[in-house]
Image (tube, rainbow, N blue to C red; front, side, top):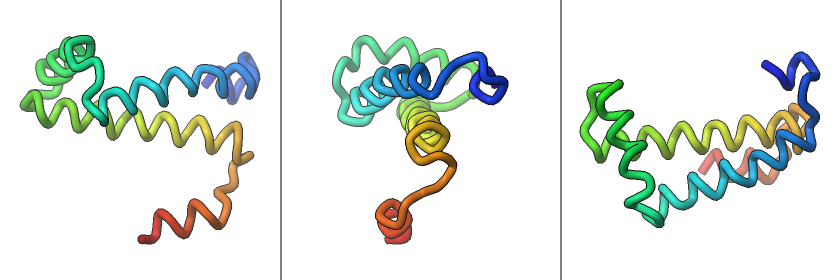
Length: 89
């Protein structure tokens, strides 16, 4: 919402996206699993999911946030042909 209201810049969103992407990659490739365990437990409690499903949920949501940030800042609301082709496989 802050981006839409021009309260934060594209550069600020892009900078923050680096942290989001790093966190999601860490979850996806099971790095820092002890650090992420608390996140999975909280999701499990709030969503009534198993820990494994909570991890999957966190990863999917993280990638959604990552791509949303890229879409808004790096792609100017457009997805280039390269990414469209990859997503169709």
